[in-house]
Length: 255
Image (cartoon, rainbow, N blue to C red):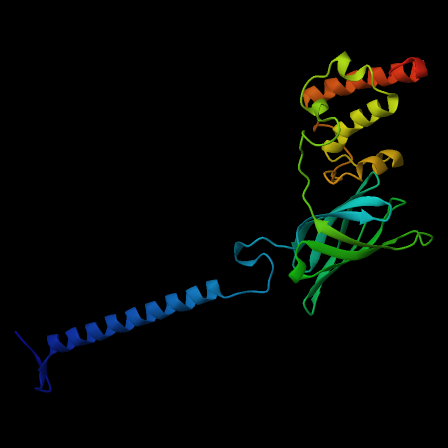
């Protein structure tokens, strides 16, 4: 049985037209929504680390710091807060502070805890156009110490047993023949080069000066425990024994 609406057309036909119109409208809205969503995802952003991209402000930066070499590690940036570590002259110190953008530059003001005689404050500048560099100044808490100005380059520590003057000390067990004709100073260098390959930051000035001249050397830790291999541990013990012999016998020992 069919019903008429005002005697001009059948009701089922009207419902069919309405359904087609509604389906077409929903499809257009859904398509438009998807395009808008894609545009939002692909829209460029000035926020570092957005859209799952690496945050260029984070990382390890290495370079000259007065007479020493420093590693400045920026490890965390959340909103306007920043945290990191400074590794220099046998010290591994945390720092925390703020970060803000001025024009196109990012500026960091961060302080070390203040419970160590060498602590101070870092003021850093990062230019997005030079994402692999950090410039800045360090002001020591001790007013008698002059401020340091520095420019660091991005460089990540990586253990490499093949670098150095005596790489075999990290690659295989040494024998007496490898060390018995070496002078005491050379033995000391050989032994400490094992630590340097692991990024050990030396407290003794003469060792710092020796290794900080090496391009491959990156200060990374003041605690070497847990990093040395079994081969290296045995070689260190052997070298130390011969260092002692060299010290005791002086000119009679070695070449």
